[in-house]
Image 1 (cartoon, rainbow, N blue to C red):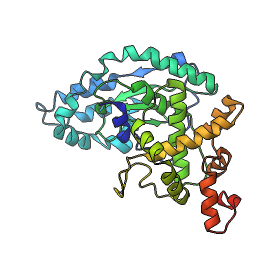
Image 2 (image 1 turned 90 degrees about the horizontal axis):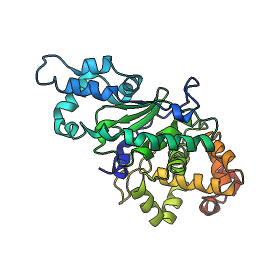
Image 3 (image 1 turned 90 degrees about the vertical axis):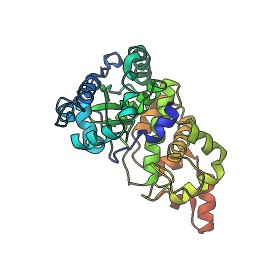
Amino acid sequence: MKLKFIILFAIIYIKVPVFGQSNFSDNPLDAVFETKDSDNFWIAFDKMDKSKENPFVEYIQKGSPGVKAFTENRIINADSLFTVVKKRKLDYESSRNVLDGLSSKEKRVRAIYSSLKYWYPKAKFPPIYFVYGRFNSGGTSAPEGVIIGIEKLQNLDGISGLIAHELIHYQQNITGKDMLLKWCLMEGGADFIGELISGESINQFSYKYGAQNQNKLCQEFVTRLKNTDYQDWLYGTSNKDDRPNDLGYWIGYKIIESYFNKQKDKQKAIDDILNIKDPLQFLKESGFLNTDIEKYQKAKKESLDSFFK
């Protein structure tokens, strides 16, 4: 399965800002790839048909900080994991050896980390934990580090792009009122900077659809961006039309890209993008939706500036 399909399920993002832990290294060459949870998972998996007890209790008890972080909202508990694994044994089996080529990706990931260090000197580089969950997330960022759900990988194609995306989430400190715009800037920002440092686009299908339907989607987004209802833009659709999941990544990317291109100091622009304090003012400065917003406000007989208050 290529990553462009994986990403549709990858981020069930916890809707609070993620702050990097200050004790993690600021040296990109110190990046840690932690895979012991994979070994522990397969030990438990191979005990399933022999043990009268739930072998995944030990998997969680011995788990890395990545497993602990993944447990709260994704694994839930050992019983929940056991239930899913029993139902999807063959699906899990297909990923048994998926990490065998990981060492060949490490140099690439360290190069991506070094690229981020250039663009954002304040960057921190947390551990990357490869863990097994319940097929409900391919990756996330948490205070403990970057976490990759191994069971959703059938190969390592695009893994460096996914890690880059999650690495950016780890750096972000985006504040302001909770609204659709804020979360689209968060996801679009991770895509934009992740692509900048890795050269890999991980949402190609939704981005193609967005480009083909830009006018219609921009007009709709203007009417929705202040709402807290994310349906049809992030994490699921109502099936009202043929749109793919997660168009919010695309429109967030376009806003971020427009802002970045307008700034002379590109390194400062990256700092701004990672530390957005007022999503509406950032949108205004990007200029990306100004024409659509002006038409929307004109129909309401209100000024352009009043939209951003």
